[in-house]
Length: 336
Image (cartoon, rainbow, N blue to C red; front, side, top):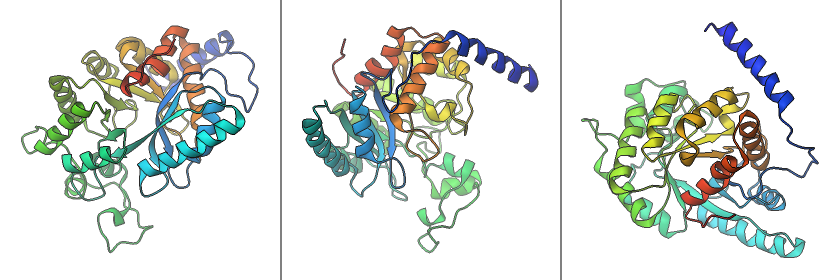
């Protein structure tokens, strides 16, 4: 199908959906359709949305929890503990049930390689989920570059590089496979530790060979809390057939607002078709919101759930992908 024909088909489908979907009247700042939802990919880093404010908004609208992939402060676990304490005090005063909050962390620093010892230290300190490398992954650096100061202490803070060659990216960035295409021993040790602690593993910006190797290792160890974020993103770029294969193999595919935002522009109907192909048993919805160009995470969750309802997921299926599966990943009991 030509690009013009694809655009026309998307245009026609969008109006079919807009006219058919009756989501109910919205009453801002109340946010409907997110009761019980758990956002497992929320950003509250410096210059992003405020962690406590979005937690209050989530609580007011009946969400169940937020997993902070990033949060302002040097110690992420401590930052989340502070949010929990302040949220409880506010909830007692306002007679609002506070949401649950978790801290996530990256498996590796800017230059230090990932080790099980470092991950154990993070978990002992209160981290509840681990991401494989993201900004400093060789895959990221080869696609969009990065801040040179991340790997060169002599570089200025504002010095940005264009996309690096794959060879350059491998020299300064992280990569999970050895010269034979197998997971490095340290990565296997990390997966084993996360299985032992029953802590979720998010694959980050892994390449396809890494994704399949991580999925195989998780399957071998019986680690069922394995998650691939934003599979349509150019960083991950899985086909629907690959998503389906990985989902059937036990990995969760976590679709995000980032993908359907104007910045990436994935057709929500394609996302719906991917979910239908994978099966809702191994799908989650999340926001990946926090940056100033995005809505807040609660509104991001509303939009994700609304789009999928509009395109054809039943209420029971939306509950599965926004409430039940995130709860399974975080080790929570399911709620009716």
